[in-house]
Image 1 (cartoon, helix red, strand yellow):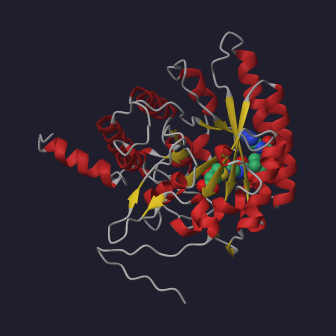
Image 2 (image 1 turned 45 degrees about the horizontal axis):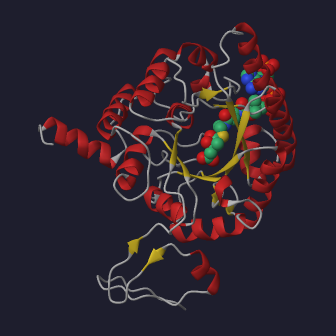
Length: 354
Ligand SMILES: CC(C)(COP(=O)([O-])OP(=O)([O-])OC[C@H]1O[C@@H](n2cnc3c(N)ncnc32)[C@H](O)[C@@H]1OP(=O)([O-])[O-])[C@@H](O)C(=O)NCCC(=O)NCCSC(=O)C[C@@](C)(O)CC(=O)[O-]
């Protein structure tokens, strides 16, 4: 059995040929591990801000008023976020936190160049979105993108959308077709890609099959949702290696929850595997209503802090503004921000330190 001793002078380990082909770390002999971005690989990283949707949908403490959700989105855009998931067209009986998403889209300070995807689970949700375009024919800018989602296990899928994976895929295919027919781009999520709260460990091959189906339906990207937040970097690598047998790495995104504190490590591992889009939520908002115990998404502040100055390019993002937004929205929920970086920056700001 392989054993790992953690010391300051880590030795290089022998890897398989597959690992060597795809590796992104360099471990200098007798030195410490460092990251490098391989020559020719894109340095641009797209962060998809999911706080206003995935974050707030699971906040049980308070249902955030529509006006505050609009302010949250506008502030995130002013801080430099260029993709902000704005809400979802789901049943308000199932997810009351997302009621009023149409009003959110109608009232955000829409900015050219920013994308505001909305989650749509079924044709009923898509009809609601279509209706909004009919009411606002002059506003093609409401949104140009929807997100669809399918769990990798039957039990999670039933808890989330009231049907098993096969039926969820069939329903989703209808949504994708309808949305593309409306001229919208479609992003797919696969949930519970490492662990399922009901079925336990999830086989990467199962995730690959669902991801492949989403791509075949017409999704331009598939976000791998580590819904439970128990996954570790080596599991993320194994997952990506498996999924990329069928789906190009350029079409994948990483979506990590921070339940076990692995969020940033998993982001770095996904980037090291060649993924260039990651989801995050300001203040570490959220979780998943159908994943008991799962805490929030990896905090946007933590991801931005980890990547700024690293050689990766996350665009122009005002980290102090993000920290403020994370504290502000958390206060609306009656608690402190979950972002470690956010708390540290806010503490420094209070002490007047640069
Ligand atoms: C999918 C349904 C709607 C099916 O729910 P259902 O009960 O099977 O559907 P139904 O067709 O029988 O309809 C039941 C009632 O809901 C209404 N309804 C039906 N659809 C809609 C709609 N779109 N909008 C508004 N209302 C709707 C429908 O009109 C009816 O109303 P009633 O006749 O009882 O008054 C339901 O299960 C649902 O909304 N579930 C919520 C799913 C959800 O939002 N989950 C969280 C998102 S996934 C996630 O967060 C994970 C992810 C993506 O972030 C990544 C990760 O894994 O970390």
